[in-house]
Length: 335
Image (cartoon, rainbow, N blue to C red; front, side):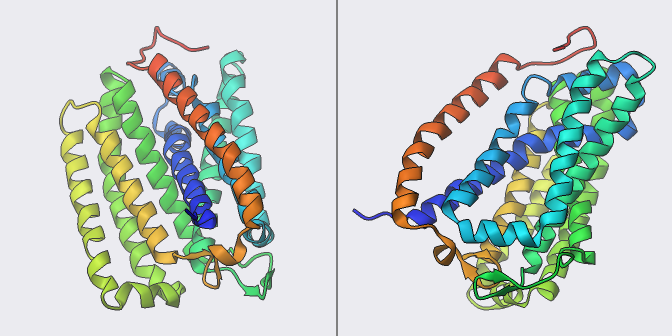
């Protein structure tokens, strides 16, 4: 029995990317929400809800990047050259944010506001840079044969900048609904109110990106509006509307889990829509995943390791979230 190894590895990368968006998204979202919360104790509670798990969440980013390098070296080389600046900004912001995350717990009352600000800006810049990368990827990367043929600033466009803003809304909504699930009292109530506003803003940004995308990428427009594809894609906007409506209704109740789960559903719908739109290109609009794939012998060898590593990552991720389940209050801290 033969396996389509490039397709399997593409699935692994998609899975790792989705796991990163979901799991690192809400702790980046907490940093984005810092400007709306000024009480020091509430900020401590917000950070403590993710303190036991946040560094493990970024394992998925490492896995996705390493998998892209090993399984699709051509795609890795082109993406790295085309998006060097926003990727470097993202990595520096993640490093700065990580330092601020730890130092704010060990700082004095005099320096703590500085580290809070650093944590906030690190989260905002990292998220915005990720959104810019996403927008540039959707817009397409200029390729001549097997080489990047664009400039170092092709990624800098109104569409990619707006995608950066849209991803900030998505992560902030993830963070707010995570805090609804993990917090109590006035902080939970505040997050419910913020999440309702964010849900409406995110719905509007999804609509704008959806309307804008066919204009920046003609191949996607052809895919969306040709038959029978139009019938396949038509349910997606309806599902997004239904999810948003259900999310707002859930935020008006005392339900702890539904808002977060419905936000995850919104993220999944957006991510799946992206995947369907660019398929089967790993470098849109010209290079398919089979053209960019490493030799099958390399893919098969790496797959053996991946089948051992991924279950271990899933196991310790599940265990860490299970151990630190439940609500966080001002008198409960991780540090």
